[in-house]
Image: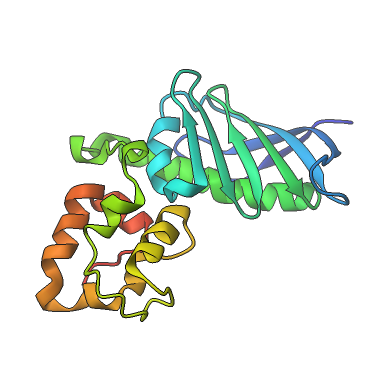
Length: 199
């Protein structure tokens, strides 16, 4: 196929254009395609910093090869240090461009934020499990979040299927020790990624 180039942004701080290099039938899902794309800049410096922008259950980062795989938008998207991107379970080229536009926006935001990142931002999410989160929750099993237990809620937070703001007891002033515990565990940036707006 002929390469297709799209100018997504005119003033992006790191990435502005994406080229679709190849489109093939998706092996995983009939009727969908897998797409090979190339961004117009290297992602080497920012991929590890993108990890905290997504819930831990939706992201896999291979440190040695600096490869980031995201399980978002009902598909797998893999970003490589060279700027190469692969995407499966995609409807068509328009769907691919719409999805990569959202990711390029995040890439540019992370690149902009690099200069202000502190040591606190370097949370190793691979060492955080559901019990760590559970220990920072009120453990009332009130079911106000829609889950039957606080432990089930902790699992759903890590998988990206729940948000911290849905734990209504956390919003009560007398439960601020739990919010502080979560802040110490996750850091402000990951708290926001996991749906905490701050009260």
